[in-house]
Amino acid sequence: MKKIKILSIVIFSLAIIIGIVYSRQCDDKCKQGYPYSSCNGNLNLYRGLGYDGNGNVIFSGKYNSSQGVVGGYGLPGIYSVPSSGGCQLTKRFDVLGEILDGPGYTALDYFYKYLPQSNRYYVRFNQRGSPIFSIYNQDTNEIQAVFNIFNTPFVPAFSQNESNPFFVYGGYGIYGLNKYPTDRSDAQSAKLIYQSQIVNGLEIDGDQLYMTTYQGQFLKGSLNCSNCTKDQLQLLVTDGELASANSISGFVLTNDYMYFSYSGGIKGYPKNGDASRVRKLVAENVVAMTTNGGSGDFIFYQTDSGMVKSVSTTGNHPQVNVLYTPVSDNQCQCAVGFSGDDCKQCNNGMVLWGSNGIPMCSPLDSLGKPKYCYAAYQCGTSPFIICNGTCTCFPGFKGNDCTLCGNGGDIVWTNGYPSCVTH
Image (cartoon, rainbow, N blue to C red):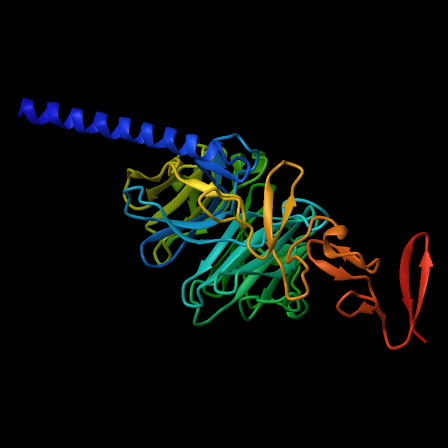
């Protein structure tokens, strides 16, 4: 027995040594090619969690650089870990389309929801400082903008049953759609359910709506309401911690409870608002959470340190299980778009240099223009082209070099800027 224990210690020690050596080898290999290559540091998780209905918790993130690049290095990705534990990280796919410099700045920063039946990922992109509720299509590697998020808390909620889709969102009021949104035009067809009600948590349960407010209230309403006033909502219970928290990071429903997460942990009340049966599941800084659907017998949550955990909601003693702790995969990663052993090959592409000193290889189209740009000069010599992340014609102009002014219009210059005036 003693020999077995000693052998186990030796094997464990060797594993640590091998990991350290490999990490150093990766650093040495990548150092020569930096900034074209970098050794991955720990995985930096973005806020938000999803569940795929098949035993996996989903989240997004980007590896930090061993060279200390602020904001991570390379491509962000969508990852998953088994909900049963084991910390086995799987990368589902890379997320393309980030533009980290120039007027077209676009960066992934939040994960909202995964819909298994439609294989649809709802995320948020920061686009020139404006948050965009979007769908990322992993088949086409395209970002589909759905809603612009204005200066009010945007709180989306999806019906559990994808076969009977319903979507609600909170802004200045609560709005609903008889479908899951896929396009900007869907906002025009949304119906107003409750006027002027601002919420920081929102969930659907059948034809009922549950919500939380900045005043610490848990409210209940109906999806069947149309243009109702907020005084028609039912007050279930008021929570002092919810009211004093700067913000909540999540709101979920189980069979009989409603839970909110915040910097103080995860706390919940029965759906009938019975304050005598309040529950505190965990007491740590929680930045996101979701459930395993159905009865919600497990809540999956993300801490401010990037850990992903689960906690049981049944029984008198909640059981916490660590699903993932951010670590490095000790891999050498090329800068975005580059390839080759030295990560310096930009085949059929244009090298764009960001203000952080990291290059990106942007593929060229058939006209020799880059798919992404940081500045207008990268789009060619035509004075009628601008860069807003992609090479785009000034309004009214068209053609390969944007030199055509409508159908025989006149080009008028004002303070160095062209306008196409049509007759």
